[in-house]
Picture (cartoon, one colour):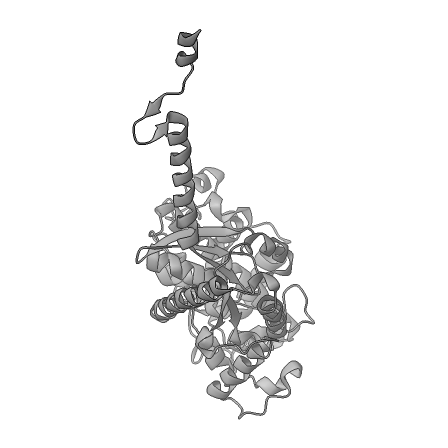
Length: 430
């Protein structure tokens, strides 16, 4: 009986106790280590309206602290860039029609004396001899309305092997599944109609249309693509770092990447800014250390794509008001990036702030970058109801400028870490 009892006793380890207790302590230690790692991790959330430049900030973080893009990533961006050009060209052609400039295009094509248009109008480098009006008609038929059968320039086998135009040499970017069906189709249209796109872009009429691009919500940065069509249409085209930063891909899901910077783990989350995507924001609010809210300075005279009657800057202000007064962010550092300062500097020269109905109270000098920036900074500061917004938490940025963003992100990281320590002390004393 006694022997039976002693056989059921737990195995003990000198100085530790039972084996079960040791396993329990190891589990508790693992849990504590995981908790400390989680507590020491800095969670950053990028918020803002659509096309404000959030995803560009996200890409800059990847360039500065992440892994370089793979070959497949580069091919995907190549397809997306060509798709972006087609989207811009569609919008510009429709705006040209809305402005009633077809007659100007006809006059330019004829020239003042039949052939004098060659004096002012740049000629396409591709060697095409079509007139701007012929180029416009081709684009409207095959790219915008798409009501005519596409010219047969490629056979299915060539397309499958990456030869987009059927001339035998494979296009490096080819087709890419990650880019999506629409982008791949537009990339093919771009290569088929490159002569027409280049001819129309270099026309004087299109220069006039470009000056009014805000009416069509054309992305300003894509002028760089339109000014470099020969390189982008080349079969050997490989996107550069700057090309990637300018590429526009709508964020339709929550994207997260991890970085270790100076021994500190960071998680950065990017979410879609369009109205239809904002319901997903709430899923990212838990345990956020800092919010980087991105608003585009240059959008003071533009309307939302989702609501043509809503000014984009007003939408950004209302979004910011909701974020900085949300209880979920009571102990969260909120940084404000007023982005696209380069485009704002260009646009302010011909588009007065006070001419926009929502900003008729602007009393600063016309066409003045500095006063315009200060005006919008105050608009955002007024959104915080309880506490005054700290000026050091505001940055005027150009998200496509890696040098600028390296400085801004380093400064932001320092501020976030310092502010998090300060708030930890306050909550600890409470």
